[in-house]
Length: 545
Image 1 (cartoon, rainbow, N blue to C red):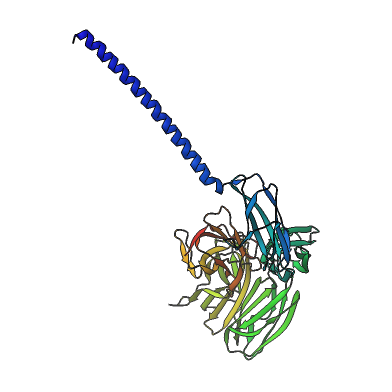
Image 2: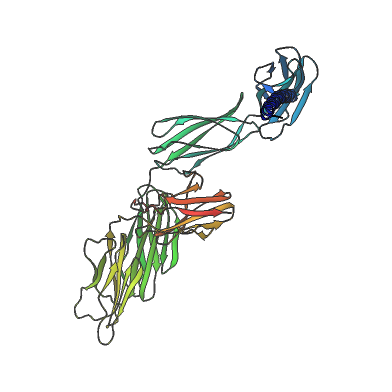
């Protein structure tokens, strides 16, 4: 074959082959397209029986509110023909699954029903459209009330003795099987403001925080609970008290020196600007008088009788109705003859945190002191005894603390005489209480590491100290914040649990329930008797696990 003929033959072969492949490709694409369309139709046919449309094909008629054990009717009204396979489902809001599924087989599409217990029920109706080969649904809610009204069993005010400016919490205990209860609070506060509040809650313990009340006096509130057309009502009355930061005043009329074999007796007078509560008198550590008292003033004559030679201690503790304590301490000397001297404290204007000099100033000449004891608030801070021909030192240094203090000196001389003298030193109080410790179920909380307790009841205790005395009438606030909250969701008032004999150290406590998790804890509003507030102690981390 010639080269030219071969080229022509080869060109014709390529052309025919190319046309053949083009026809084959076109045919394959057409077959693939038909296959895809068939699959779409098949899938559409398979899923059409399970689809739901928002276009209503029927409506449902039912009572939105009813009572337990009462006959009701739930009916389905088709808006188009061809509706079948109707099912009615009922579920209580407290349940996770449908409790009832009822089929309706014939027209009219309705069922009679009786709800056996109160609750909020979800209603779902399903129907199948034959004409469209599709399921349709409709939804509703039925609230079932109890035939017994919501009964108010208990009402409490928290705190039980509120003060001006406190946020008052109203705690109601309501017994009811109703799914929801409407609460109505209406009344007038002591500062002539009207309270008119409503809330919707379940029964049980219900809490409602009132706005702060800014004046002392009587508050009267009317409380009503309602469920459907049933109701119960009551009234609660409480007093808002003025904050009492003033401790009682103690006056004691007694001698400092009593001759040998004489009777020791004295008279006491107590006063408080609000109301007194209790008193206790100790002599040489033994309680000789105590009891409850009422009113703003109290007077009493006390007879101790004969006592042995030497020094004796008289301690008096008085509290007012708010728990503010006042203390009095005095040393009495019994002997055949007494030394005569005075107590001097310098400088005259004392400052907390500074140093003062307490000195014995003798009113006699040619006296050699063999023993001198210095007391502050009944506690010995220094003792000096003569030695090697030198008499006892007549002065000592005192680290000044804020508050009112009784300074006492007891002295003996080389002629076998003794004596006692005292004075009162008042130091302005500008400092707040000092934080000592914070515990949870007796586990001390630290700032640098978390504390660990078990879930359940947790008792928090804070221990504080103030030289001028802690005000137990003002309750500290314990704040609890869970780690995933931006705010303190629990605000609890703490009560005084332990009070030292001088009222300077106090332990406040409160108990609450805590679940698993970790929490940030802090305490606010710890005050002393001068109204100074403890500085911010920061937050403590507590793990409950």
